[in-house]
Image 1 (cartoon, one colour):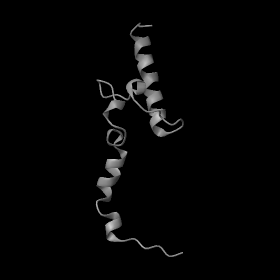
Image 2 (cartoon, one colour):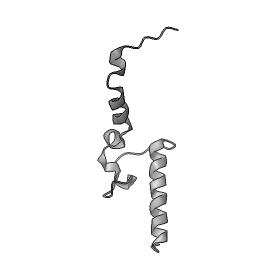
Image 3 (cartoon, helix red, strand yellow):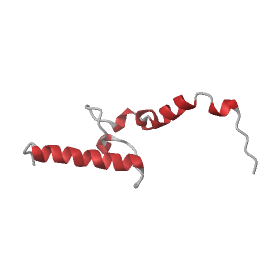
Image 4 (cartoon, one colour):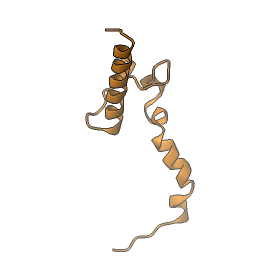
Length: 74
């Protein structure tokens, strides 16, 4: 197997990686609440199950539920 990598393939690699890890850039700001936390309740699209994003949204919901429980809110 022969593999060729050109300089143009890796140009701005760090910026491209950072841009693609930016969830807001990929999914839009509608995925965030007023406190800039993940919140899919007002998001127009379904999140695929078992993806990192859906797992992070579930974790944020668990954190919110725990905060409410600790503050005595049902």
